[in-house]
Image: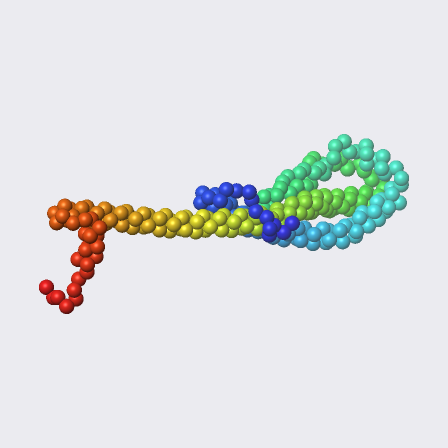
Length: 261
């Protein structure tokens, strides 16, 4: 939707022109802010993507090490090591908690691991294989830490992806729909106001011409009435007809250029 041939349905008045200009200023500012927000989210998105790639690369080696440590522990202590570990553990010592991090107005979930209490490992591997059991535990603790970090990064990655898509849709809507529509509306209102101004100017000229013609008619009527009064007065004084007086008036009104005074 280009928005080039679209405009809002408004009444072309000066007040509406001010309102449309204010809306255009607000849309421009909002577009600039959303553009900056999109750039900030994109930069954070790329950083998280790099961290995810590096974490996944290291996770392969860590998981391989932990699996090999478990195999060593089982080989040294036997298959009953799982039951011995479960008997010594009542509650999880490594736990995960979540918090939120604000990035350009977007709340990203973050997962953190923490240790609560201590695992009873005094009797684990006491008969044989104690060192391998502790090494296996340390390897799996490190694996859990990497998995928690990876889960946090991937959750933030998905949240940022949705936020960037939403922000880009808003930026495109403002840039390609809202602002062109407001521009077209402002141009339409300006054109209509100019047309109204030209109509008012033409109307004033017609009114002035009409008034001028009416004044000329009134002056001509007053002049004719004055001549008739004067002719009637002269005819009464000299005893001639009014038509004769009318014939003498143009001659009397003419001025001889040879006579100075």
